[in-house]
Image 1: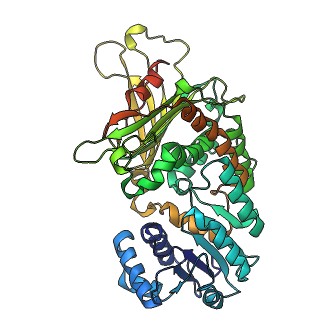
Image 2: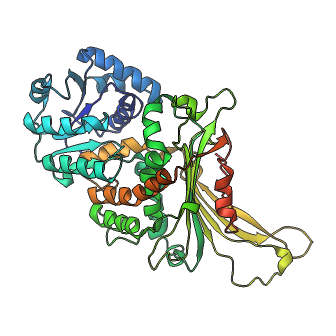
Image 3: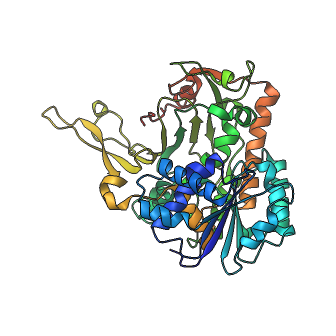
Length: 476
């Protein structure tokens, strides 16, 4: 908890991200006592509205997306909110913003705008003298479109801010269960000695969504699932599951180990890549209709088989998949341990192995499948049963986890960069991703169609079956 006053300026304060995530998250932190006077939220956008009108906008957003709302708490919260119309590429509004800010407060500037405005915002913050030693900026993805654009963006931001002041946000890292990956791995002697290729057969990472691309067609046609999800969200999950123990749980120590994982990734062979594109089903438009391009070669689904060239993971494959319009909303990591070296129960007992599943969403929790005897008189028949720990059930109703944005915003205020990406980490991820994308573009590969609300294209199933393995089901 921080007891130091802060001012959070949200550029793009009337946008969808602010309405759905940032404003409700800050209200919840206010209710938890983490927004002490004279802390303020300052919305900044092109819309010509008054502070009173903006407070009504914030009130509506909190009521719609903030869960249970107490009228007294909301009224107090709104008193700490103000608004300034501004021009990101001109000088309008910047002097008014400068006059609002208190030099005694921590300053955080949230770039909740398109990446095309990052450079303009960074330059004008400095030109108008708004940056102090205790200032920081929050940058939303996409952080570049490829390695060259990511490097160019890093150069721009680092010419105006120290790296310690730049917070590249990936909301997946704010999820309670994602952080529990490190607690499970490094806080339990039960797992860490087994966390290597000697005992682990393979690891699966799945991020499945039921939604399509909706109104993001123009963006998604240029990005695709590889740039939108694989290069950042799934890459971060891979890093946390595969990294070496850091010397300390400190920002640079953690990020140093994540960087080593990315740099250890082998290039991906073309036959280890499966791309898909959802088609029309159940009254939902197909991908090509939503991007308004009947010849689109952009993927809404991608699955990869990856390898890490290091001592811990040599020979252990990592299977990653993500897609839109799949059968359930389901994000999970499954660690599949190897079979016992010799079964004393004979062939009739079947093959059994242990699986550790970290469920990220929905119903966050951890399941460990263990082998036991099947009840009955029919000899030694084995079955696998789960040791299931749902966080909601195990920790009780009073242990409701904060939303990812709640935690990450407060980490920005505290100056804790552990859950944020560093510039070299972002560039290393693009350096691995770019050759994969260039490869399928050079080959003219076209994504395979798949029916909406299924598990994706058949090729993704074959990716594992060729190795004698199966995906864990997308159960939701």
